[in-house]
Image (cartoon, rainbow, N blue to C red; front, side, top):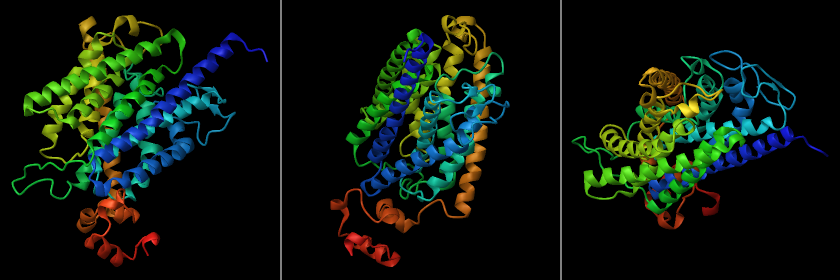
Length: 449
């Protein structure tokens, strides 16, 4: 079969998009390692079940309704087509894939699906070691079916934030993905409360160390790798080879973030904290996610080093009042806001003046606050909507099935309480408290009977 040049080009674009989607999906393994590393051993196994179930719920709900609301064209607030997708369906005007849905378009759906799954994974970092497992699928359904699609439509899918001024700039989702996830996590945390023993009688925070910094470090490296699919894949194709430039921009920012976090935490504490170094990389990657497609190479290290320093300072500040075990509010929330606003500072005329690119040049080039103002509106709108909807959802969960485990269950660990088994059985089998708890609940695992 002879293929035309446009057909070959589209096939190449689709191949790149699917490869990028697979890289982003692999970030779920990074989140698993990061959360396992920051958890105590008695809560390590539940992270695996949580990651698998959440990704599965998102996959199904996104296909049913999430994609249609986010990328189904239609109105300024929400999409109106693309529900229960099938080949041959019509996608409304205004969608990035408007027209008749075909096999190649499936790559776009998959790519946006894994973005939604990453955003949801961010939510749960704040809730480690005390949230009831039933909360995961309930919130995941609302998140993938309503909360995330609304924000994605507003900024990525032709919604109103693409229409104010010359359009909001968020190339790969510092706001859409990361601020959304962090805001959902904040809503959960306010209703959930701190882990037992986190704060002393005087109100000062106590350290609750994770059980494995090597596993945490592996998670950071996996996330760093996946981010090349995240940012460079957001070109949605290979035309002009821009994906290569964006990959380099991403790496420069991440490297600078590690340096910025390392210098900052050493200056404050006199020690090089491993968790802070890792979160410096993540914070910088989050920050460069919005501007990666709009800035020159020289701006990337500046954005990254500021993000690395911000993460350290904000983790220490937030820890005084809120128990965020993995630093998600800082690495994804604070850094996400900084990265989004950085577009309004550093967006380069060479890039934004090209046809089809949203927004205008940043303050550094233009002397104008126009784009910075648009970015701020996007941040405020996203935070407000996500926080309200997430808080209402978690409040409903708390009032019905319950959001938090009991003190006894928290003390025993979520692995044995929620799953009847341990992530590290050789470390915990034989404890008197465990046997008593299982006997009372009549949940003794079949293998132990």
